[in-house]
Image (tube, rainbow, N blue to C red):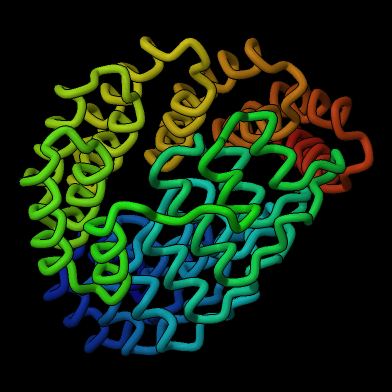
Amino acid sequence: MDHQSLNLKLISASERGDTEAVKQLLADGTSVDYKDKDDRTALMAATQKNQIAAAKLLLEAGGDVNTKDNTQLTPFICSGANGFHEILSIMLKFGADLKSVNRFGGTALLPSSEKGYLKTVQICLDAGVPVNHVNNLGWSALLEAVILGNGGRLYSNITEILVDAGADVHLADRDGKSSIQHAKVLNQQKVLKILNKEYQENNEHIKTAKELYKGHHYEQAITVINQGLAIDENNLDLYYYKGYCLQELKKFEEALGEYRKALALDPNDLDFYFYTANCLRLMNKPEEALAEYNKACEQDSNETFYRYHKSNYLRELGRHEEAVIEMDKLLALQPNRYDFSFHKANSLRSLGKHKEAIKAIENAIENDPTNPLYQLHKKQSLELIEQNAHK
């Protein structure tokens, strides 16, 4: 077998998490940083599928955490963007560039804050990823957590640790609005108190549990939460924290059980559908996770949050046609959201629909005409059309 074929086999084995094959192929002299047609290395392939053991082998063999694929994503940023905090933690020991950015100009901290990956956010902050970095959309991690969050328990926790790490609550986006102003408009009352440093946790069981899980003492945190539930079995916040701790222990079925107990107590608390969806995602059950998003969308009069995060997940799964459908629904609700148009354009580019991508990006340009990012992406799509025409 020729060397190129062996290198491609390494990428394939890494993606599957076949550690024995990875070990053997590395021993046979394959190139650890060889890139496939999409400029993916074996490390990137392993990272995308959260293959922790394979990723560790590749890193120990000299795999580069900072090399970019054809979407300008590095393995390090990929791990942060997908909430794969175990791989992220390992990569920090192998020279990860904390200031590296994706094609949107965002560090690993920004997408993890946007998508609600609490532990990933904490790891990024502890490692020294800049807390007030602003991406090419004009957003910091805090702005993303407020604008693209829902002000619920999880996003309040993320807001809290960002503020504690020095996030600038007055930093304005491209429309001149700060996180405080966005929280007011979005009626995120708890987040607003956190941003104004007026919030204090009154429940002693939750207060103690939060300190314990910050130190990774999840079993002890659960013990404290159970003590709280023995006093007040209708406290939905306690079910959330217990579910979160169980997830961190990889007791996913038990975590789902806690979230569903909360939903049984209050079917209108749609926040728990987001938690169940993410738990099912971690269990690699995409159809069940998507069904949870759908339940929330069906019940929420303002479905933007759930539909947006459903579209994020579809893009993660590579299901761009479905992601475009979700983006169209979002744009029907908020036609001036340039970030929605931008995400739609990127999915269309992934599908090779460059003319449609240009139409979508032109909508973003119309609503945010001074942003050079959109002009750049339009130019790139035009270049791809020209390249395809000469094939």
